[in-house]
Length: 166
Image 1 (tube, rainbow, N blue to C red):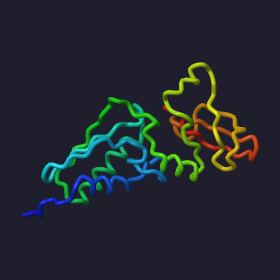
Image 2 (tube, one colour):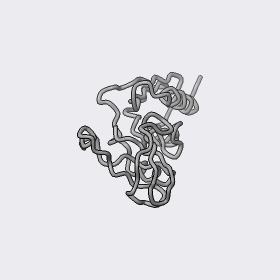
Image 3 (cartoon, rainbow, N blue to C red):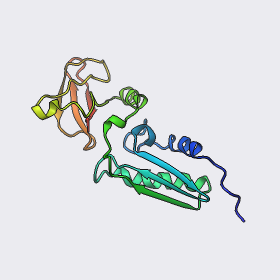
């Protein structure tokens, strides 16, 4: 007979904090804000996640990585469900995640989703993650992934990704 699971939900959250985002491995899925809820029921665990956007290829990887880690903890049944409302937003990125993005060379979202300047055709002021200059220009609406734009710093001349404010 298998030993009963004695791990707590808090301990599960600590394990989830170690699972990297497959597209940006310097931040975890919890720092990204996609993990919404954890419930333990005997030898089963239920975890709710919110995809960053519809069709994001990383979602399948999140799901598999979570399942793998929960099975390592001894859970016999791992139920991962998707919570679509409220929709994921870059507002859910932790400040620590934003700093890690900068250190990795990706400019984090500027402002919050409450800022609707883009609706008026105003581009955000994006700070270069290398030299911290705000003398930057967007060179492509899409960067290395659909959730990023490609920018170039006019001072240090380095290209960089900007994580769009979604």
